[in-house]
Amino acid sequence: MTTDNPPTSPGSVDDWFESRLHWRALMDALLHVRVPLEAKTFFFGGMTLFLFGVQVVTGTLLALYYKPTPEAAYDSVLFITSDVSFGWLIRSVHHWSANLMILFLVFHLLRVFFQAAYKYPRELTWVVGIGLLGLTMMFGFTGYLLPWDQRAYWATVVGTEIAGGIPFIGDALLVLLRGGADVTEATLSRFFGIHVLVLPLALGAVVAIHLVFVHQQGLANPTKPDPRPPAVPQGRTKPFFPHYILEEVIAWLFLLAMLVVLSSLFPAGLEEEANPLETPAHVKPEWYFLGVYELLKHIPWKVVGILTPMVFIVLLAVLPFIDRNPEVRPRKRPLAIALGILTIAVLIGLTIWGYYS
Amino acid sequence: MSQQPTADPGTSGFSRRRLLAALAGFSIISTLTMIVAPILGFLIPPKTSGAAAGGKVLVGTVADIPPGQGKVVPVGSSPTIIVNTDQGLNAFSAICPHLGCIVTWDPGSNVILCPCHDGRFNPTTGAVLSGPPPSGLPAEEVTVEDDQIFVVSS
Image 1 (spheres, chains in turn orange, red):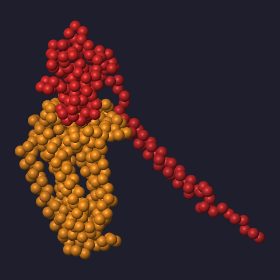
Image 2 (cartoon, rainbow over the protein chains, first blue to last red; image 1 turned 180 degrees about the vertical axis):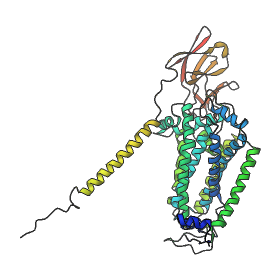
Image 3 (spheres, rainbow over the protein chains, first blue to last red; image 1 turned 45 degrees about the vertical axis):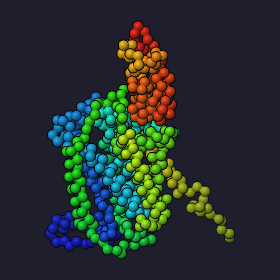
Image 4 (tube, each protein chain N blue to C red; image 1 turned 120 degrees about the vertical axis):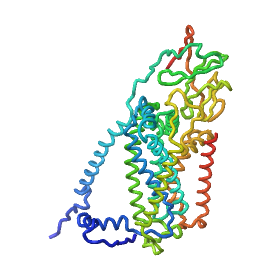
C-alpha cells in the first residue's frame, strides 16, 4: 500500500510527538494510505463500527442503573425509562443501534459479496467478518433477555431450546447456556456477564484483526481482480485521510441523526414482566431471528430445522474457498450472483412470512 | 589407525534438542490444562436439589377448573396443565416438546394449544393433533380429594 507524506512545520504539536514517539511513521502507516478511486464501500463497514461504538457508550450508561436479577431487572429497566434523565433516549438509542448494527453488517456483507471482495487476497478478512456476524448475533441474543419482560423471557426459552436441539452436544450446551435446566436467575447472570464483558472484548479483538487485514490489503477494486503475485495497484487512487474518512464521518453523522429520530418516534418498548407459567399468544423473536423461527414451524424434523441455518453460516464462512472463479464483475459470475439473490429472497420471504403468520 | 565412528548428537534417536522440545510441549499443554480445566468446571452449573423432589402437590380446587376449561399451574419448578374434559381431570406437562413454550387451554377449539408455532394437543391423551411438535405432552397423575386437586410429581 502506498503512503502520502504530508508536510509538517517545525515546533508544531506534530513535531513534539515525532521527537518522542516516531509519530509520523505510525501515522503514515495508519492513515496516509491511498484507496482505489473505483472502490465503492458505501461506508457500510465503517457505519457498523460506528454503531458498535454507540453500543459501547450507551451500554455502559445503561449498566450504571441496570440490576441483573429476576427480582430487580424489570423494575430497573422501568426506572431507567421513566425516572432517569434521558434514560428513555439512552435505552432507545441502544435498542435501535443494535438493530441498525445488524442491518448495516448485513448490508456490508452483501456489498462485499456482490463486489466479489471476498476473493484473493481477502479470503481471511471474509472469514473473520463472518465471525463478527456471529458475535453480533450473540450480542442481540444475550441482550434481548436483560429487560426480563415476557418477550425477552420467551425468546430466550425458544432460542436456548434451539441450541439444545443440536445433535450430540445440545443437552450440555443448553445447561451451559442457561446455567441449569430452565431459564432462571442463573441464565440472566450468565447472559449479562457475556453481554457486557465477554462479547465486547471478543468483538473488539476480532474487529481489530479485521481492520488490520483490511489495512494490509487495501480496499478491493470491484472492476478488476487483484494481481497475482501482489503488486501496488496501478489505477487511479485517492487519499484515505482525509478524503475517505471525511465521507465516512458524514455517514456517521447521518446515522446519529437517524438513531435520535427513530428513538424519538419509536422508543424501545417493554412488555409485561416475565412469567415462566405463561407464554404470550403469538410470541415472536426479533426480526433477524424471525426467518429461522418460521423455518422451524414448517420443517417437520426439528433437528433439520435447527441444523439448516448452522450449515448455511458455515457455508457462508468458507465461501471464498468454494467459489474459485477469479472474476469480480457480476456479469462474469452469474451462478454466484443468482445463488446470492435466491438466498436473499428466501431469507426475506421467510422473515415476512414469520412476521404475518 | 582406523577412526571410530562417533554418534552425531543431532541424528541420534533421542537428542537433547528433542528432549527439550518435548519438555517445553509438555509444559505448555499442562499450563493450558491448568487454566482451562477450572474455567470449564466453573461454567458447568452445580447440581441443585430442585424445587420438587416428588410427592403430591396441591394445585387448586375443582371450582378453579370447571368442565370444558384448563389451567396451567406450577408443580415444583415444572409447569403442568390441568384440563377438565368429559372424561374428567387430566394433567400433562405444560412444556411444549417442540421449543419449550408453555401450552395453554384453547376454549374455542377445546384443544391444548402452543402459542409459539400453533402446535395442538389432544386434551384427553396429550397426543399431537397438528403442528410441528415432535411428540405429545407427557401425562401426569392427578387426583381429587375433598374438592382439592393434587398432581403427583415424579
